[in-house]
Every structure is written in C-alpha cells, then in structure tokens.
Length: 318
Image 1: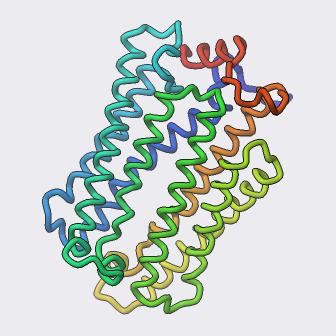
Image 2: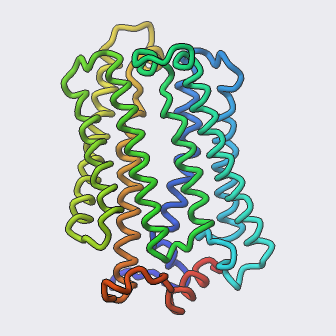
Image 3: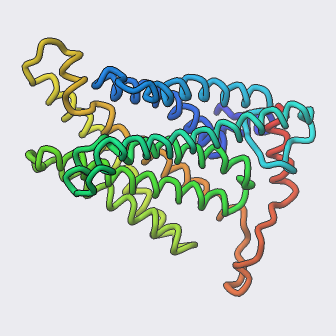
C-alpha cells in the first residue's frame, strides 16, 4: 500500500514555501563557515570581519525558532493562521523581519568594506579584480530579501513565485561576476575556468526570460533543464578546486585550502540552481491553481480560493 502524507497535518512539506524558508536558514547558517574561512586568510585583521560570522550564528537559529513558534510556513500580516495564538504569530513574524533586515544591512556593509579595501583608492579594473570579492557579501542581502519576501507577499500568488525567480536570477548575476573576477586573477590559466562564467550567464539569462515572458511553459521547462545542468557544473567545479588544492605542495592540507582555490565557491552553482528550481516549482503550482483566463483579464489581481487559504491555515496550525 503506497505511503501517503496526511495533507492536513503534513501538507506544508509538499509546497515550495517551507523549502524556500529552509533554504534561507541553511544558507545563512552555512555562510558562517564560508566567511570564517575566507576571513581567516588575513587572520581577521579587522574586527568588523567577525560581524557576518556572528550574525549567521545568531540568525539561523532565530529563524528556526520562529518556525517553531509560529509554524513551518511564514505568512504576511493579515494572513496569519487563525488557529495559531496571535502573540506567537506576531513574534515569529517580527523575528523573521528583523533577521531579514539585518541580513540586508550586513550584506550592504560588507560590499562597502570589500570595495573600500583597494577599489575606492583608485578606480581601476585591476583593483576591482584583485580587491576582496566585492559581490560576495551580497549573498546576505539576497537571503535577507528572501526572508522578507515570505513575510510581505502571499506565497500562494504569482507575485511570490515570480520574486523567488527574480532573486535566483540576481544570485546568478552575482555568481557571474564572482566567477569572472576570481578566475581573472590567474588569467584563466585553465580553459575549464570559463565553464563557470558561461554557465552563470546562461542561468541568469534563462531565469530573466522566465520572469519577462510569463506563461511560457516551454521556456520554463528549458530553464528547468538549465538549472539541472548547473547542479553538475557545481559538483565538477568543487572537484576541480579540491583536486587542485590537494595537488599543490604546501606545509599542510589546511594551508592548501586556505590559500588555494575556494573549495566551497563552486557549490554556489548548486545552491542557486536549487533556488531557481524552487521558484520554477512555485510558478508551476500557481499555473495549476489558476484557471485559464482570457488575455485581457490576465492583469487582474490574484485571489486564492477559500480551499487553498484553508489549506495553508491548517498547515501552520499543525
């Protein structure tokens, strides 16, 4: 007999909203490790370099706590589950908003400090390439917007799904800049270093096209295929970075990874591919719920039916 989930109790597992929230929590938490390794290269020369690590270590547990307090599915004000005590829903929402705003500020501050290291002294392409990776802190900003999105926009409508895709596309734009600048530091010595640059550009282009050209299922299916390819690209890059680091003669394995190619950087391809897939999944679910309407009426406001609203409410209350 096939195993079936109780939709009333576990239905939140079958939608993208929970997984997007889990994505944000996991990424904010993992950034503590990634940033700690990156800033260990200069032994945390500036005290401000501890700020993103401390923020990640605090923010990820706070978001997990918010899920325990208010339920697994975040919601905007006015759409809080009726069965959840109001103080719990308000507390969970406030925690999420504070973490989201804090993450945005940490990212923007990091961008300023990274550029301030060399680029602001003399605005040249060389300084832009060889300065601290200026686009890297914007990962916090993107995750902050993702956290705020689920607390500002109804996740059952097309706007939420569209914004998830937009944020994924923005991530790919940043990944393109990071790949280009990072590999330019050694003059693209290996031809394989172009793979990340080209694939990032493709991913950004297709996700942007999905946002601009709405209701085009062949295009969305193609974008899905591009995201799957990025999963492979990320694993390939991870292998090449790790293999290159281990092949270098250094005093210790730790120094090989500390001063060698960033081992975690290629996994950003897999990370952004997952976010893109979640956004495409959300768009597909909206298509299934939304009845076919004439082109003249497609600008009408999305109004979820009562059954869908009750389903979200019962999921959060459980």
